[in-house]
Length: 452
Image 1 (cartoon, helix red, strand yellow):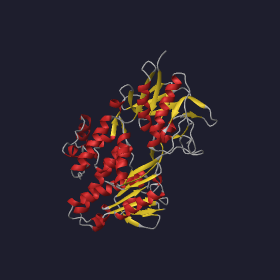
Image 2 (tube, rainbow, N blue to C red; image 1 turned 135 degrees about the vertical axis):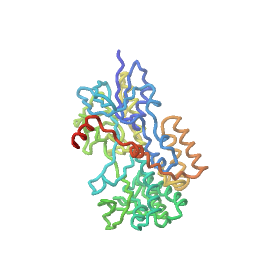
Image 3 (tube, helix red, strand yellow; image 1 turned 90 degrees about the vertical axis):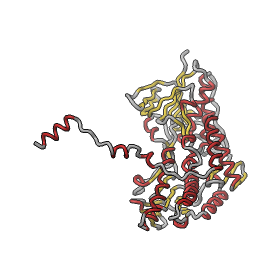
Image 4 (cartoon, rainbow, N blue to C red; image 1 turned 45 degrees about the vertical axis):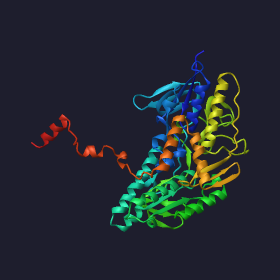
């Protein structure tokens, strides 16, 4: 019997862990595993704040797919169509024509993207925080703003350069803002022209609290600790406009800021629009607790599976609810999903995913954090240590674990790096300035003819 082909769309938490487990559980005689993703690496998103802050080398917060998935076929490209009715997927590689591939099973796990709103100026000024590129860019941008503030004679430009707005009070927003506030505070030691009192960090949150995942009490503690650091927290407030850096909030406050970071939630990847899979009211793929895709009548679509941020999975520990879009669920769903596919291929029955959310940990900058795990509330240094320990244990591969621990050790011994490498974003500008374009022969003839 020919091996069954399992196509994995997306190499995030679900895709990478599921493919890795399947490659270990099924021999190549039983299954061929194909992983498709636009990037050749998996980004461990909980480490993005630390990568942006310089606590971790950015490359150490990503996992190379080919190195980790040695028994899988990795295709770097985009999925442009999934026709499950025909069990085919169309792939557009980096170069060359698109190709169509048949499959027996498909894991649809493209993850999520930033959920934005039609706010004037957001597309021109906003900085996302979902990828390693965005994390690197944010760090370089903030360091550049300190340089601008240090040399400009214009007080309004200086004030705008030292104002930083973060929209979204969940994990991503709070952790990114807390880490970057630490970075700015450390960097100011080398800027005698600047004063910490001039720096303005503003956190804008539409609900009435921050970090709802760690509970009301720990969320309130986090808000108090951030306020002590001079961070302004605007609850029940919306960003109305940021055109040309002119910030306008729903509470009536108006000021200029050159930095606007958007972390206000996520939505399923738009790649799902290119599939014929049934979806829920918010665009998520319809799933059973077994992580099998089902239509609106509850009929299982043979060979279709999904999990993670892009899937609507019933939470059996909370009847009537859905599993939250968290890394904690995604990693555990990936394990059950892989075991279920293996079971089906070998003639068995799939099992239901059941995992009670045990709590959350959040970092608030260096040596600061909050945690609410198994009903136990922890704050300060112990919570920060729990936060680091948990995520170090979760990042795939021994190689990455060692590198992350080494980065943390060096950061503990040495001072934080406060260097901006802004040229990374436009690496050819200097070369182009000294290399004039050469006209083609026909262009030179046309120019010559016009001057006769």
